[in-house]
Length: 285
Figure 1 (tube, rainbow, N blue to C red):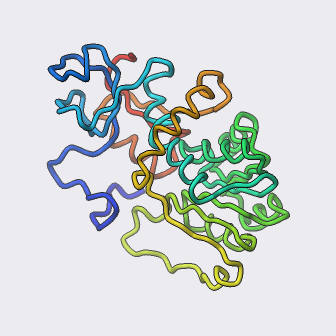
Figure 2: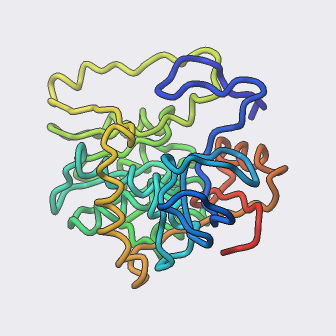
Figure 3: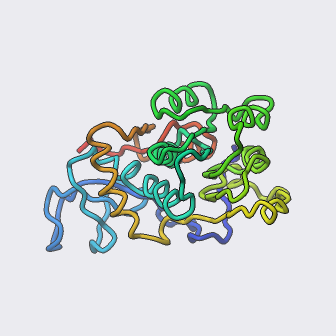
């Protein structure tokens, strides 16, 4: 991939030269004059790429020690909440439906598919490479997983979805999206969560022909998790027992050293990570 990020309007302001790179962090309080935070508390919040930070406390949330601290950045944090909100508010999965998840081994997709399985759906993942596809099927227990690198993706996906697709959780875009759109059933729901295939493009690709949306009455809706902040507490209350008992599976890729954070970001954009990408800058708490 090319080593740049686009400076264009989005739902979040682009980071300017000289600013701290944005990102969520988890850590331990080492000093406090705030009545709501004590020495040793574990907290998460959008503190950026820093080894230490000073906060007024309004952007930090205390978390329990019932789960590994890094889980609150992944399965019990924004990615898990994104999967939950997408399925609850847009996907509205019903038992017996076919659900397709792109980037199925990622932090969001892996949780979205497990939510759909709990709802009684038939779940098909799309992932990059045999190792990720095997994990999606054997550990996450998806019904099938298609490698997006196969020569004939549309044909392979059609074979995996003989009854069409009722819900699609979009994390990728590009050729994967094109293969899915041709298989959508009437009244299908498409959760537009991410389009990583075009994040680094200076010229946007030609869009698909959406005429089928009218005839099939397909619902296509964008998802920004911060639009419904109440979903975070809902999700943590629901999912924390699943994490403790081991029935909600997740995976992490850990890169050591703040100096390696740019490399970690490149891995995310090129599909080099497996599960939630984390950068560890201190001893585990």
